[in-house]
Image 1 (cartoon, rainbow, N blue to C red):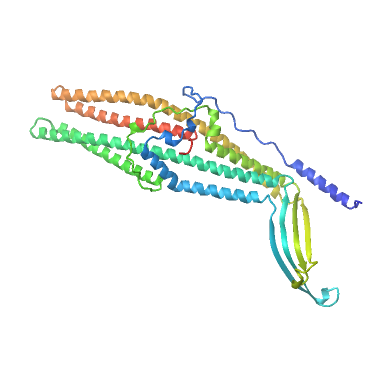
Image 2 (image 1 turned 90 degrees about the vertical axis):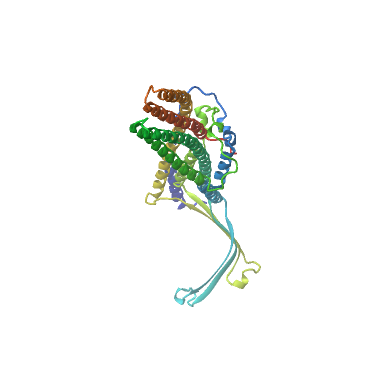
Length: 467
């Protein structure tokens, strides 16, 4: 028969549960705002499989492939990202284990003395208690889903960390490819500068002789000398840039030995082929940084569910099974078996606002994750649009620059002929040579920039299959 004294307590408990259930708000925000259906300022691109193109298929240069292999194996920053994935995996395993009962073996013994004035017999007593057996460590019955929500959050954080590692790997491949292309560009520009320097030195030698015999003025000699000194400075600057670029390559590859295969020229890189961009919505499944942001959003929502469940009663179970005795020697005698089972209900009533603040913190972090998710999608859309626009217009610039190089080459030839016939001054020759050299340098730079736009598009689309 139910005790009348229990009715008020039971009613109060139900009231607290109802109040706390009502106190846990609220609806979760919807997903990110829609993104445009097409990329701006670019011709329509049919759905393609650009993201399924592995980097080995995209980069045909064996030297570059070997460098990428070295970077994936020895880059320290990538090694740090891999270590963080292992850390997140271990944290996830710990949280998953928290949802399963834990049983441990243990033994304990207690000896105590009770003074006479506290003893019911009026005499001092010495007593003992010994136990040995299996203990059920406090296990929370996940009635409200709090533990399960924490497990979901840990799993989502692990998946987000792994996606972040994948995003860094794609970024590393793209950075290494762009640095390698810059090295090939500098090699070609140095060759052009060396050829120009040889021509300038020969011109200065001839002009110096002409000045000695009075066939040319000192002004013309100083103009040739000025062009010669400027070319030397340009060559020195290019050599400095190449040395710095080589140092960057060594850092990216973890200072691994240089590949045996010789590097290929820019024209042999094979990066002029089209890379289909597909539809903007496909970025949501292609790019690992978007998937990482999505997992972080899922983790934040799971943490909100766990924070709401903290307002509700928690049920925990503890138990013991084994043997117990007042004397150590009687611990394993017959009839000494013992067991206990202790369920406990804990309902938070007042904690100074700690539980409410925990929920507010979880909700604020969810809003941060939503904003991060939306910003990541918008940034990805912009990166793809930028790369597509760069590919389109750099191709136009390269074609125009090729025409300019042809024109400046013809101009330099005609200026030299006019000077030899006495129809113009040597200043026209110097001006034409200077313009030709600048046009040739710019053409190499534009070609490399066009290839880098392909690499950037590969990265913006989320890379491809590994290897």
